[in-house]
Length: 188
Image 1 (cartoon, rainbow, N blue to C red):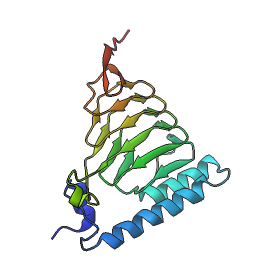
Image 2: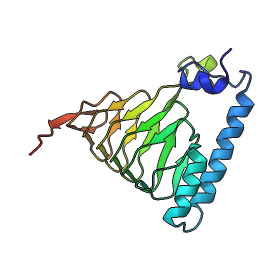
Image 3: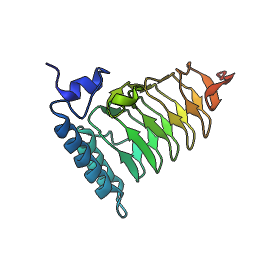
Image 4: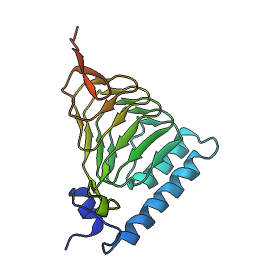
């Protein structure tokens, strides 16, 4: 039998009635507690890395910068590459899995949301996850939202304030709500 954490990562429906749900919620609250401690007051880059290691359950590469506050519900299924820069006030719902490549720039107030609710109103409290994959050298503009199951291709740019509902091809610029391709990036 799949435990509730595996069900989340496999994209299966998870309900408050499922065995282990209390453990999932307890881990979410533990993650939020650690993030709140990191977000309260000034933290040196070294302190932020220590907190992020606890949140992610693995070390954050020293070449990556995270500027608190960072709001995150569950960090263990989140991976962050080398040379990334994550600005302030981002929200990561990581239960469905988030993979951030190398040299990714994430602007302030970006939302990475991997969890959705059942459309059936009688089961609306149930959720299911879809992973977000952000390939190397992506730039996500301020106040953008990336929805569950989206892959953003190598070198792509997401314009400020966009809502990304579908995969973004490599080396393109997308913008809007819903985000759509507005141009291709040419290497010079």
